Length: 291
Ligand code: C2E
Ligand code: MG
Ligand code: MG
Ligand code: MG
Image (cartoon, rainbow, N blue to C red; front, side, top):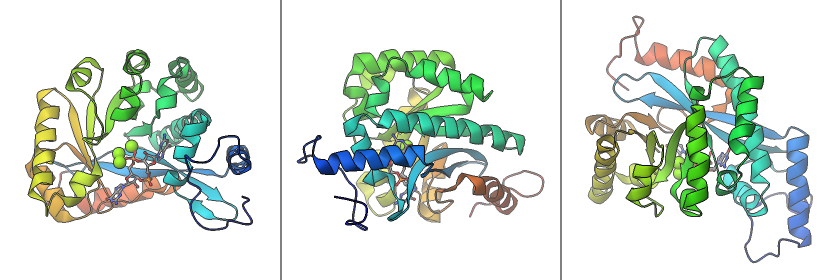
C-alpha cells in the first residue's frame, strides 16, 4: 500500500487487516501528515428552519484534500480513524477550526449554531469537555454556539461513560443532538435521561418518505416523539421540494439537504447564506412561500 500505488479506490479500513500491518501503518502516517500539513478541510452544510426558511446553523463535515487522490470523503477515512483512535486528533482539529469559523461568521453578521460530529472514542475521553472549553476561551466563542452530534451507537457503546461526558458538556453550555436517529439501538430510557436538545432523523427515512408510506410514518412518529419529549427535531437528506413541504406540514423544526444546500467550503458560507436569505425571505426578513 502506498499513495502512489493506489491512486483511486477507497481508503476504507478493512477489519480483516491487522492493525499493525504495513498498509495500516502507512495509512496512519498519511493521516498524521494530513493533519500536520493542513490537508483537512472543513465543509459546512446549512440547516434551515422549516417554518420561516431562516438559516439556523450549519453542520461541519470534514474532507481530506489528498495530494494524489483529490478530495477524499469522510466515510473513506473516519471509520479508520475511529478504529485507531486517531479520531480524537481529528475531532480536536475540527472543533478548533469550527470555533475559528464561528468567530469569523459572527463578525460577518451571521447568528448561527455550528454542529460538530463526535465519535465513540471522543465520548470515552474524560478530558474532552475540558479540551473543548479551553478552545472556546482561546477563540472567545460561547459553548452555546455549538451543537454536538452523537450517534445512538456511540452512546450505547458504553452508556455510563458517555452519559458522564455528555453531562459535563451540557453543563458547559453545549447543545447536544442524537444523529442518525432511528438507525441505532438507543433505548428511550437513555433518551429521557441524557441532556439532549435535538433529534436528527436519519436520511435513510427522509430520502424515501415521499414514496414509502412506512418511512413517512417513521418520520412522523419521530417528530412527535421529539416534541413530546421537548426536543427540537431536524431532518437530514432533504433532496426535493415535496419532502420539504411534507416535513413542514408535519411540524418538523429544521431541514438539511442537497435541495437547499450541499456541504460547501466554509469560506463560501456567508455568500450562500446572504443569497439564500434574499431568495427566500424577502427584503423585510419575512418568510416567503418556500422553494
Ligand atoms: P452525518 O453526520 O450523518 O452527516 C450527514 C451526511 O449526509 C453528510 O455526508 C452529508 O453530506 C450527507 N447529506 C446531507 N444532505 C444530504 C442529501 O440531501 N442527500 C444525501 N444523499 N446525503 C446528504 P458526508 O459529509 O459524506 O459525511 C458522512 C459521515 O461522515 C457523517 O454523517 C459523519 O458520520 C461522518 N463525518 C463527517 N465529518 C465528520 C467529522 O468531522 N467528525 C466525525 N466524527 N465524523 C464525521
Ligand atoms: Mg452529523
Ligand atoms: Mg446524520
Ligand atoms: Mg447520517
